[in-house]
Length: 238
Image (cartoon, rainbow, N blue to C red; front, side):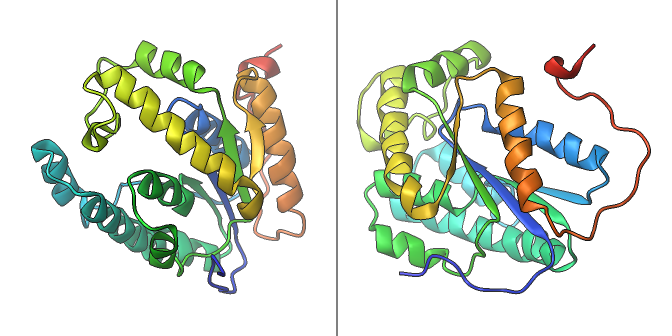
């Protein structure tokens, strides 16, 4: 089936995907600062951030009564609201849209929670194809170490506790994220992910990201002229 809707626009859509602890958000933040420093008009959006369903989602998570289908529909509603408010209009206006997670997050998580892949993809069939889709691939043990180092405690749904994989929060997280990792790997060739080794140094990953995005921006005409380019990450410091 066709995964995307064809909609004409002058902008560019760059998205990042990966399991928790892959470092994708850090890389997208660095890319955002760099693009802005180069004069590109940038818009940022992130998964599960729409005000339309935020309160409902929070209540459901707090009461731990979200079924896989309910979870899926809430996220699809969240995405649809953000897509039509924060993604499509800027793209049509010729801006560069950076998305921290896109529809592939739902493809991976919802399928791991037992939902039919075709049903899930149909929910998001209105989305447009990204110009660049990065997949930050990281071994599960590395991701676990990063998450547990920077987090006071894991959250119930984040750890997949609703699936009954383990009564131990950390073990459930490991099993849940490992299954999501498998889904990403499975869809990688179909989707055409730009796979980034997320165990590389931060500046090495960013160099790869910038190189690929620079290629996608060839022919782009919406750039503003600016005089100075700040140094943005450690490897660029003198």
